[in-house]
Length: 372
DNA sequence: TCATCTAGCACATTTGAATGGT
DNA sequence: AACCATTCAAATGTGCTAGATG
Image (tube, rainbow, N blue to C red; front, top):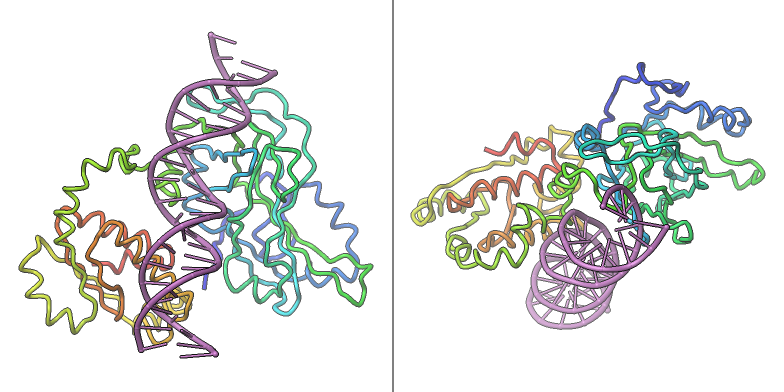
């Protein structure tokens, strides 16, 4: 289970949400919406709803440089995307979860050599376009079960679009805003559902049609899997890679992966004979029983307990394998048991470890610490 | 001339249908 | 027949880049 990240909010220049234990806070203009709430809306507003933004570390990296988000005519996804955890909802009541973007300030910006600077007043604000989470409406239990991901939200500068894209002005600064709307009671349809909303200033960004800051570009390339082709200054791309193909084939022959503890014990001595170095990593099933972050994660659960592996987990295992095979041709199987033993050429070792760390860290934060 | 925007490109992942084995 | 694993192609998401636009 994901634990909400606590953060200090006392120094923020915004009005605090008056709800106890609430992560979010409201800009002043939200008062009007609150004032019209009636008794039918009391349930949601009286709940200790707590929202936290996921991937804070990554967001902070971007934020420290000055986050930019590309906007295109056809719509562009955000990276990092907004992913939030919610607690404190009524498990049985249905909610609609919505996200939109609100202006961060009243300025228009321009990129000047190596920094953003104010370039006059902002253009007239566009009417809000909301992105309704595709799982809406759903009971509170579902929203609280897993982080709510808005990775399908797309940004555009095309004001004529009618495809549910969020329309923004280029060179303007925005921040994501989350709405949690209680589904109207079918018995009293005249009563609009209560709602809460939360803004995320740490996820503020400047909308651009082309990246301005090269550091942002690099950060995107390094962290977005779709941009892998641009890593190593584009050396991963085919025209640069072909030269090294023969060399890779030679070293790939040395990569082997042993699966089970038994096979490990039996096969180790023989395998070690043809390789440069061996690395052993143990993922103990019994440990996962005591670690909530692992045992409650379906992916890791499937990894460590094959008998309970469902279709989705198997598919993810396959995805991991496919990626591994792209770089290391001799992966026969992976994680059929709880112990991983990797034996590979020394020259490939750093990449192999990085690969596993990155892939497994995304579902199990503790893995890097347990990788020996 | 300059800043900004657009379209097409190559490369990558994701998704779902088709296939074959049990 | 049902289920599962695997394969493969199409769809989609990336940043790059040259040229267009105002």
